[in-house]
Image (cartoon, rainbow, N blue to C red):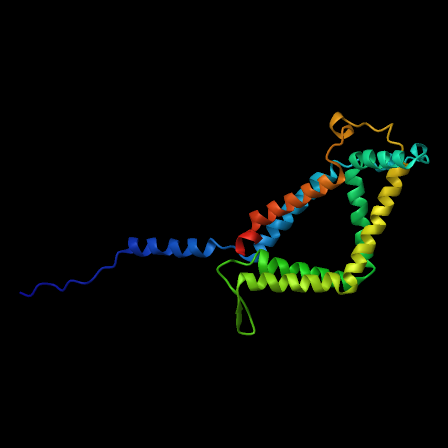
Length: 227
């Protein structure tokens, strides 16, 4: 009597174990859109936190607290103290002036948004294992960085975009300095750190930039590590 034929049996456990590795590999590199969304969410969260520390606007425009400074030294002292006290309000005012200027020049706004999108999607949040390919040519990270820097320099310094940004910045700073020099700071509550020359406006800008850089590093690869 012939023995029954033996059929090969596959191991379902080994087959099931090979699938999660593929899933893990594919999920380890999120899409650039998800990274940009994370970056924007972190940046908006920091902006809301910073705006919560602003001073009351009625205190900024109190007409009874304005007087002409007697000397240039007094004006500079007032500007320094008001910078320390109203730094969030001043930054908001500068952002408002910039927004009005860009909205009144839509072509410049489109160029700046396109430039920002190019930096985000072509370099900052592009997966490092996916090279940039344009018209059949593959660009390395260093070549991509050089091209973006060149385009940025051309757009900012060789077109009307740069002059618009510089003019807007000068107008905004002029408004801030004029207010700071005429606003009497004696009635303001200044803690010991601010009175002794605390962080001030430019330190706040540095803090905002540092937070934005940290959010970008958390959302995608660090720029400098790709060079």
